[in-house]
Image (cartoon, rainbow, N blue to C red; front, top):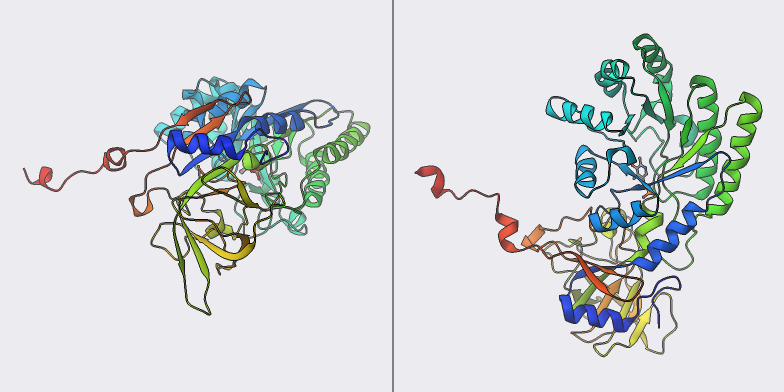
Length: 440
Ligand SMILES: *Cc1c(COP(=O)(O)O)cnc(C)c1O
């Protein structure tokens, strides 16, 4: 029995992996990533499409290499993301940098070198533009600009980004000033970028296309690329809405064609999915190490050997992830996606951190909400799905001095490859300096 229709992972393969690597670990199903890549590359478009993977969602170099091999580029959220992608053998010419950092000093010199090697710099503030303008003009480097769509996207249902509570990008009310400044300096923008946020309603994404094209038309008649950002909705739980890439592409295609009709300009489209490509390819494999309860009026708890230090999304956002309960002999006892004959109980799942927020069953305000699942034995497995994006990269893994856990890639032919080893205790403390050495 496969855990996902589009993947190859089975309970049996999970047991094999547990035997070989010990829990907890992340297990990525390559078949799912490949299928998702097929989906985004087939997105309808009018005059060309570039797909960049938002590497902050998962920055393991093996995955980056696999994704770039398919013809995708990279969306980097920091100088270090660009550097580590380059260390993975990916050329700067396949990256765009969109960062809150304002590179100065050595970082600025590094940025210049990266740009001369082809990195596209997406300025996200007036200050960033001021810092880079002379270099860009002198070296004939076209820039991209991330625009904060302000009021427009605030009217959509997207949580947070695009609203006045979000600080990302040059605010629409500053764009005129930025354009005037760039003209004086002789700086050219070849790309305009808006990222409206993650996990929003696909409808918000459609509205953003209209909004973005409207200000491109008004302020940037010379750009060649319109970047619509990431934020394609993926459903981790049954019944959640999933972005329809075909439908969104058809909508964008229509709007880009109309733009051509009005302006005689063929714009290339760029998108930056993170979640959509990798979220559902990732499984956090854990073992039940203890069972507890809080009295007759209380709750049943399962204690797993992996929790918030490996998947902090429930604590951070109240996100729900699907659970697969698997017995020690490999039968699927329950799952949010499969019908099984086990009796289901209301259970809370906690991790091994001394922190009451270390639970995988939290709501958006941090209260524990029990979930219906099979009641496993100590030693059985609980696999937490939807953990391929913003888990390995975002988690506070050394809290309680737990070690950063391994990442395993399940290849399409069934082979299990280690793509990151478990951190050792020595590695955890290697940068600390003992008190004694300072007294000598
Ligand atoms: C985070 C981010 C993305 C990816 O968002 P997802 O919701 O993971 O698709 C794309 N572009 C930028 C600029 C981002 O910051």
